[in-house]
Length: 240
Image 1 (cartoon, rainbow, N blue to C red):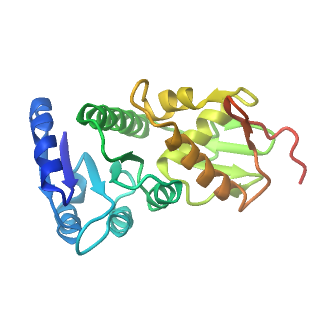
Image 2: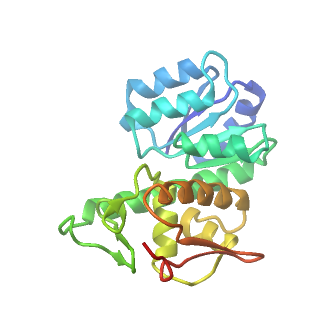
Image 3: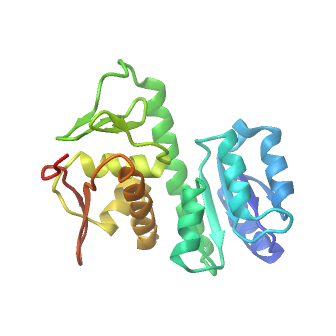
């Protein structure tokens, strides 16, 4: 794996360097936001993973993330942040990050999250390269929603649900495949993020919040909270 770590805390980078070497990954370290972005832009398609600190000199992590997403919609990005508020997490996800890890973190946890995200991205790339069929073919059809895995598009009554990030699409697809089935946060972490032991349940909540906002731009809400358990998809009672 070729990984770019943009992190201004050199002690954190030095700590992670030992773990990355143990995994035999090719890692480049940058300590400044603008420098990190320039390094990525030199050869955007060469990177398999980016870890990105939120607080960086010259250019903050949110801006770096937004600029990276202008160039690549697929490179996996994990945001690293010392902050622990839902608003900061949502901002990072809104800018296109696939996940976040809150400092202080265990190196083993970060390694596990990187591996899981990389594994999921490899599965997606394999699916994209072998997918065939017309863009009119839909893999999931419910009363109001249609989802095409090949084009990675979702429609509510023929109106596209715009601006979905890769993880938001995967989350909607997972829920919509089994309408009215309740998924716990732990199960969604396993199915969508491939995290079984190292996941942060707030990742699910932050993605659900943004996904709901995007669905509501085109129609009524179909993702319901089952208090104390998790979430489910149910558009059977929607009236338009």
